[in-house]
Image (cartoon, rainbow, N blue to C red):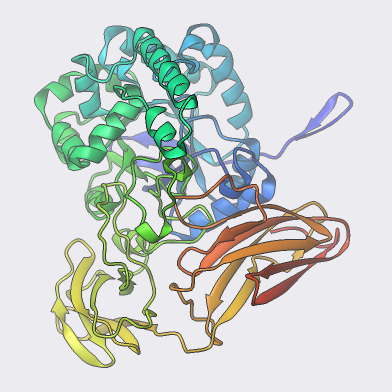
Length: 588
């Protein structure tokens, strides 16, 4: 929007939006099944900031991954993100807050919601109203208040107020069905008294640690035992017991009783990890619209099969579409060779389809197959040289990756996954068949032996005719350090992302190449550097980083017109990329 005196100029879109049990969500009269991804507000390497090119890049990559919607978990999203969604055709569920009047942490928004919710919702609607990408408002995330009469009344007030501001969009709220029941029983409930006790305990142990000369001993002493509360409690519970217990718990009859009034107070019922209730509730509550407001990657196939013949199920938002800073305990442990000695260096959970650098994981391939966006087959291989098997939670599907380059591992066992919608899939190593399997929910597992060469998957229909194939090749002996900018022309002041990869002369990545790389820029500024590991020393505002399975990334802000030169080096090899900086070429 631009202003000129008393006049204002704004972009807007025109489309019809309806939501009914017999049609689900329809845009311009056509049913749209939401294939959504939850995202946090941060932009990875750039931290908790927003800029047009970062938001557009994120939307572009998520759209290429197969998603048609994003959820702004768990705060209202930026105007830049909305602009990018409008331009690129990405739908948006804009979310109000992560908590209501019950604290999740000591200094969160709960102390302000009673006085500020109307003003803040007004601001959210004012921001969103002209953006056609916004199709749903969400009033909150896993707010246990929805299991109580006061909370149900508040949700009703939220819905009615949002309708008064904007009657063209439906209202939902992400409710963890099982955790609502546990919270109503007093489990994991936050209190200021608990927080004060933990703060005092932390203070005493920190004082004791300060008197100890041993850094390791001090670190252990400074970490007091505490009882988890709020979201931290439920994340810890899910990580320990497995995510299936949430989905199974949600099927219990008391969970229905603790959520039905809240669901009746919103236009679309938001189910966090409640997919086992979809068919049952669609029959029991024929007027209820259901949204998988937060789901697991492994449930994508089941969701899609149900949604195809159940219009009441309007869509799904997987946790998470893009990796984010924080919430470090809900993913899987990092491989030992990428860990550091300091637990505080773990800065992310790794629960993502797209990692913090913008690289798609094989879980994107699985998702696209599950959603029938492509039939497959697509290959993924567990890193052959990694002998440990870090336990993963339901927020992650696999630690496999797309590579068949593991020098020195000849004869070692190899775990291979194939994603396909087919009657059978066959795996071949250097042309020799390992065997055939029937994919289960779009996924087949093979155990074979690694040999340099080619790994191939072939999919077949029920008559035994070949449908398609996918091949991974071993990289050659040469090793190059490649610096690859995502664009070769940019505007002055624009951000440019560049990926560094160790490859052979044909561009095949070598994941076992581990080096520390550093970046420099002429006519530009290195804004940050990162890799795909969940461990990172310091923060991303650095000019260097170790590679992670042969790759790393930097983001550089261009200077004035002319040539932006970015150089990467590991001390032995180096590579330079050139980007033309001009006002004549729009960014993209």
